[in-house]
Image (cartoon, rainbow, N blue to C red; front, top):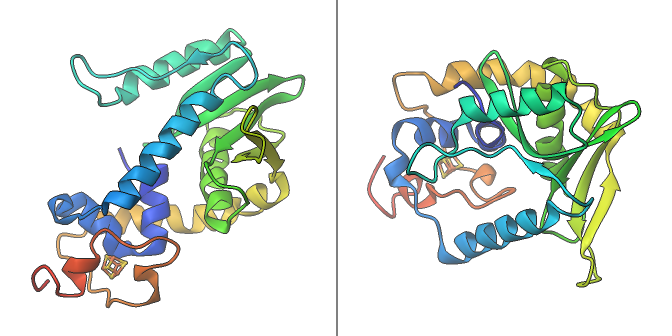
Length: 221
Ligand code: SF4
């Protein structure tokens, strides 16, 4: 695989973060509160799958492991798109090996609407970029995506799934994504560690899991 959605988001925060993910992932230190937030996000995402009613989930795991079998997911997604399944969850797409899995695709008369689920109360720029990356890959795979939404955590806990349309902003990032995805592909394969000095990017938009490594708290890079 080349660049995944997660790779793109992390590489755009800091290319060294992406490089370390590929070459020295054992140096990551994920704070417990961050792990708890990720787990809560996954739980919210799982619950959101049924927000439009019955759905087909595209997730396939490698035999005996909790690791997604991307090849099988791509095949399963293609099969369901071909037969016009109304709601696909974790629909997988690959373009020149760049990969993403879309939280929810919902069939509408003019194509499929794309929904990215976020366990957060309001739109953030990185959420829009995240959805825009998926839009970019899915469109390049030939899927017609007329509209893009974030599904936020609304105030009604009985029905917390709050779609917010971001079509214009997501489509507006298409060229920006195309301008960077190939650079990140190249940078992640560099044999030497990227010489990126620590800076504002170490905490924005997320605190980096290599913070201790790069700032010398857990050894000198
Ligand atoms: S700590 Fe800062 S410089 Fe080091 S990988 Fe993370 S974001 Fe990049």
